[in-house]
Image (cartoon, rainbow, N blue to C red; front, side, top):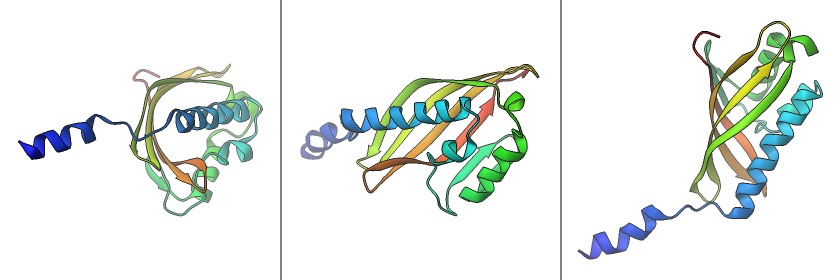
Amino acid sequence: MFLMVFTLPLFGQNPLTSKDEGLIKKALFKQQEDWNRGDIDAFMEGYLESDNIVFNGASGPQYGWREIKERYLSTYPDRAAMGSLTFGISRLYGIEKSIAILVGSFHLQREVGDLEGFFTLVWKKVDGTWYVLSDHTSVKAGE
């Protein structure tokens, strides 16, 4: 009985403060703005610059900040390919004080054909700044 009374409050808590929720959302929407300006360099500032980060998409996992940046540059070589990006947030919650998960959607409006889908981002707080540590993005079926 003691164990249940002691552990129930722990599992019901979200260790993410409202300030940190705001910082993560601000970072995500800054990436959206950077993308819509055609600035992949600025967009990549939202990712933790590390060999240990991962982008997982239709082609499988891609590891490393430089490799992920190169993937973006080759997949989206110009403004026409980049289009206009809109993010939506479905859920944001903390795992611990410095780790959070954001589940969301994206819509990419382009002349060459729109894309939309879903993503799960694992965020890590480093020296007061939140960065994407893992990005799992999938394009909606039929796209």
